Image (cartoon, rainbow, N blue to C red):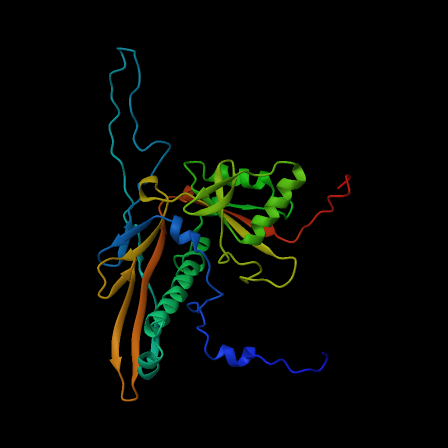
Length: 317
């Protein structure tokens, strides 16, 4: 009957006896970091990487190629090297993590509080590492692309023709395009408008669209108007095309090997001790850089507009 009190155990009281299934801490700013998965890395012993370049003409060395027996003068010469090659020194990305040992002692079931704190701190440093590989003022990819490898978006939005032009700049075994997710979405809209939807492929556990067989890899570290997550509809960004691998004279990531407290590639976690207040301290460090081994290993499409949309119901558009 209406207004009659239910004679049964209530939910709030029952909740006190329930086992609550919990997740590990969820860090919303984490990304897949496909760039650092797909970029080939070179381990260094002493933190320095020297890129020895050959001073090239049309060919490295003149040769004789003839069937005329009268032409027997074989060209003489040698292959010249640069006398002042560029050297890359590893950059440090570091943070100090503090953990209250009283909290870690009491509240570490079912999840170890120290391990979870360190894990999240490592993820944060890895996010910064990917951003630095792209944007660092010294070694970042965007700041080291040769002038001949820059092109402008012809009509603002990224067109298939624009990506074809990038391929003409990095035509020796290109590995992947790199773009903000909104730039990839803008490119897909242009493909839809033209009736040429790109194919997809599964690579390294992810699904990516392809253009001319080359995957478009998303990253929010190629900013739109200087932001990872722009609020407005419009904005401009860049799209990169990269060839990776030392043996291909491509782009390589660099890291330090043999670090004390090595946790993963180029990452060290060192315990710094416990202070008088019971606060445990850890130093987390990543040593990283990146090198472009040849001018044609990377190219950039600049001033890409991500905010153009179309009314597909209007056949005249």
